Amino acid sequence: MSSDVQREEWMTQELEEKIKQIAQNNNLSCTEIQQFAKEHGLEITKMKSFLDVIGLKPVNCQALCP
Image (tube, rainbow, N blue to C red):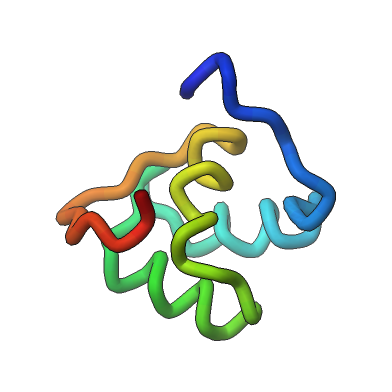
């Protein structure tokens, strides 16, 4: 987890709990990240920061969320 990443207002506890429910061993595939962003109306470009804040890691990354 990056120390310079700060939790933003939109990064709610509810979203954190929902994404952690689909994570396997604190990892999410790029496809799962894209689907989660789409289902919750989130910009894909913000997902890497969100994952850093909550301590999850992308796997099979396609570099869509810089």
